[in-house]
Image 1 (cartoon, rainbow, N blue to C red):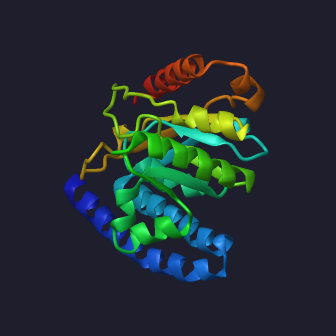
Image 2: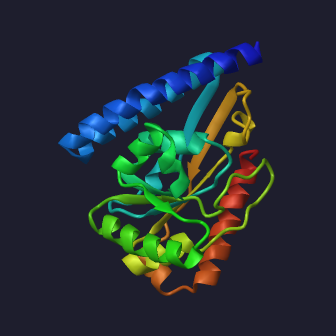
Length: 238
């Protein structure tokens, strides 16, 4: 039964993705708000399929920590789930992703159209410069920026190598950081075809203000952020 339900979900996922992507591309001609309407609708449709085909419920905690201004979201990375739910959770934002994703027909083009920052992993110095330049400009325009500091997905109980790129960007742009933990891999495993029923909890942790970031070393900030995100991820079973 799990195999059948997961097969139906994945089929619906691809149909929805390759239906909404052209719509987003077309409506991008009328401005980013129009494109974001379709991005949010895509996100909600995938979550709908996950709920009613796979039995995956969603619980959101810590939304009281959301700042009133744009910021950098630094999130745990375990599966595709967290990239799918983001448009439904936070204000219009940009991802920091590997540039190769832009080459995926329709979906990758849609990512490019909403000003996703695509970096070249093979050139870390250029990537950092691009993130700081493009990210700072977008933050000043009121856009949020989402970064997965581990860079790649981790398994349940594992911690990746956290990078300080999000902290450097927050310092350069003089904005705060909103950490995010979750347990998505319990229901939506890394590279897993089978989606398991259960509840995925997304937990936003206390906001780190721009003032705190300005007067704290990057090393200390990164260590604190990593410890907090991993601690809450483990509490959630992730």
